[in-house]
Length: 109
Length: 113
Image 1 (cartoon, rainbow over the protein chains, first blue to last red):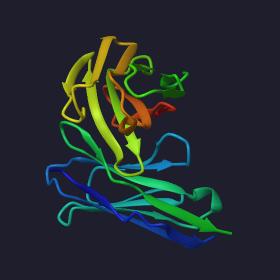
Image 2 (cartoon, rainbow over the protein chains, first blue to last red):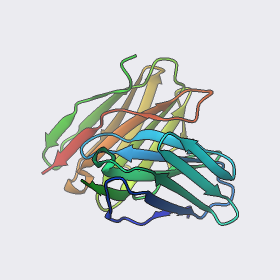
Image 3 (cartoon, each protein chain N blue to C red):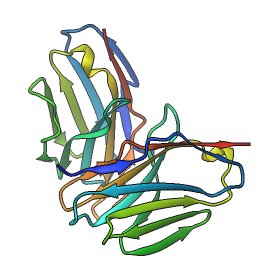
């Protein structure tokens, strides 16, 4: 069974802090990794994708991938109340995409 | 582009009734995915199509669920007969051939009483 594991949270950080979201996966042949943001009552939207080991930065977001440890993370710098949402980690191999259960993030003003 | 379109947005039905959910993918996208999301189980892939052909339906929970994609612009997910445990939000997503980004529709919130 291929698993994608996330801490369900809730994770609470003060405005302006760094929020760190973590994800582990079990299938070593996984090739592509994604972070989706889902606001309450809305559909998931892609915010970051990463395919090779290391860091990938996009604005306030940094995705980190370590395939040897089967670990992918998302850092949100200068967190804003508008970042409050559930963040879903997704892992794709040749056949399908699997999602973690999501981590609920709350950024307090 | 209108994005992925799903209908209805909300569906309330009684146990035993047939339910049909509809999806129109983004024009030009050749892969379509059906997901179910609940608090208990999170986001689960039910089935996906590539070029209108079902590729993997291992996530379909049981024979009461069926999905079709008669053409590139339309797909249905049918539940017959429906049960209260089928209550969830059902998302459809589509993917272009040269892209890894799935675009999700707004979802259909299904309540079976």
